[in-house]
Each structure stands twice: as C-alpha cells, then as structure tokens.
Image 1: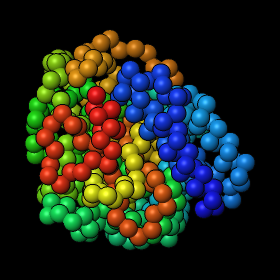
Image 2 (image 1 turned 120 degrees about the vertical axis):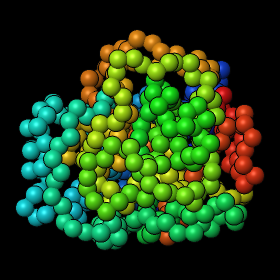
Image 3 (image 1 turned 135 degrees about the horizontal axis):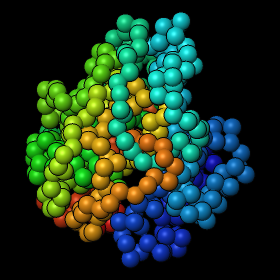
Image 4 (image 1 turned 180 degrees about the vertical axis):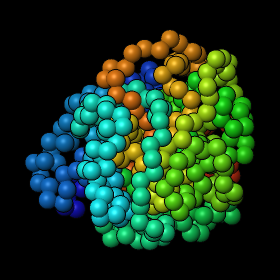
Length: 405
C-alpha cells in the first residue's frame, strides 16, 4: 500500500505542473483552483479505493486525473466527500439515537415533513443553495456529554479531534487542533462550522467592512462564499435549534489570520431592500466532534501542512444528515447572485439552478497524508497584497499569489 501511495504523491507533484492546466494560465486564480481540485481528486479517490487497492486501480485514477476535465474531477470530489460524510452521519446516529429510532425511520419521518424528490450519489452534490424554510422538531437523543460522543466516534471511525496547546513555536499559536487516533490520506478530518454568507450578504457580516479586525474565524471558498465560525465557538452539549445569533466568549486562542477577507470593504452592493434578513434556525448537533476546523493552525517554517481545504456542497434534500452539518445560511441566497470582476462584486440577475436541488456551501478539511495522533496543520494562504503577521511563513508563495490574484 505504501508503494501505491508513493505513486499518488508523485502524481500530485507532477500534475500541478502539467500542460493539462495550461488553458488557465491567463487566470491565475482559476489555475490554482484547478490544481487544488486535482489534488483533492487524487487524495479522495485514493481514500475511496480502500486498503485493498490494486496497482491497476491506482494507475486508472492517475490517468483520469491527467485527462479528465476540472468539472468532472470536481464532481467526483463532491461524490467522494459526500460518501465519507454519509458514513460519518451513520456513525453519529448510532451513537446518539435511541435504539427505537433507527435512521431509516427518522429519514421517513422527515421526508413526510418536506417531500422533496431524493437522489443519491453525485447528483446530490450539485445545485443551488437556499435556506431551510422550516425548523423540524428536535429528535430525542441519548444524554451523552460531548466528550463521550467524541470517544465513541473514535471507536467507530478510528479518530476524533481534541483541542490543546499548539506545538507551533510562537506565542500567538494558542490552542491547536489535534487528531486523536489515525486517519488515512483523503479522509475528511473536520468541518468548518458557522454561518454561511453569500457575496450578496457581505454587508451583514459582523464588523463590516473590516470584518477581520476582531474575528480570526472567517474563511472563504473560491466562489466567494464566506463562513463565520465565531458564533459556533467550541460547539455545545445539546442538539438544538441554532441560528448563529449568539456569539460565545471564544478568545483568540488560535493564530489571527485574514483568510481572504482583505478586500471585502470594496464590495459595492448595497443592503437589499424589502427582504427579511437573518438566519433561519436549524436543528444542529452541537456535540459534533469534527466541527472544529476553525482551530487548525498554520504550520511553522519548514513544516508541511497535513490537511487542505475542500469545498463541499451539501444537498439539503438529505434531511437525515442535516443535523450533523454544522452550518446555517444567512439570508436567502436565491434572491440575488453576485458576479466577481477583479476584486469587486456586482449584483446580477439570478439564474435558474441546473438541478433544482438546494445546497449548503460548506467547507471541510481533507488529509493530505496519513495522520496519527498529531496536530492538524492547514496552509492559510494569506493574501500577499496586505501585511502578513510576523508568524506567517508561506508554504508556497506562488500558490498564495494565484489564490488571491
């Protein structure tokens, strides 16, 4: 298996420089997105092969990574991630749901509340995002503390997450995120929790326009979607209706980072009129042991990151999984679309969704190698256009430039 993984590692290094991506060279941001998707395709596909993979399987995936389009690879990544998260949700149900409430019974009950046509596989991982129109009743769960849930999850999937003093050698590192147990390369390690803002709602991010001044728990996807993890904090001890309005007292125990918020104050759209703003409450499981991605630190100099960011479009039709996705949507993303021109965002007329399936634009962290009882390290890729913190050492300066070009 180690030999096969070495093949994958070599593919990751060489494909990033492949002529396959030459058509994106005039758009550095798109080039970096294509490179990231290619890496995620390799890592998550390798993970899906399992430990009984054969050489021919590996060669086939490397060939697909070399020849298939970015869109096809992105779709496969979504399917691979969704499959892992589906297994995670099954494990959480096994831990938390009483014996009399099996997962299929819960799914049938929720389907009756909102009979949306269900699909499976990749078709569930695409579509347009809209907030939930209602808040279902809170399902009875076992009275377990978050620590007990975390311990049981490790027993089922082989790992969980803990917070403890970071091993990064500088005073601002604070708390770090650690994996307790072992995870294979391509595994979903953590969810980035919190409130999701589409570009049309940047003005409603607390602290706008300098939203990053007092909040180190912000992150952006390539499509401009912003996630604010500050309201989530450390999670909680219950399953409850959560709207993200209450911000817990979470001190800056992680490195202060900007994560791409450096240009938000240039956003030109005005607050929308005649719209009800805010986040509709969703029943979320706050004892989710993996909803801690916002505590991952940037690696020290000469230390390689061991996870990378992966966009994940959760299909809101998967109602029996919804409580374990630690995010809610601010506002109504179907009312307005935003189009980016350089560093500016403009409102444009909304277009119809290709599949009609509503999605939640989330982020997860994916392991870039096998992990075992160590600190989780994420490349922050801070923008080179602003002054960076003294502790920040770029992992790859060229990638940083392309990401924020």
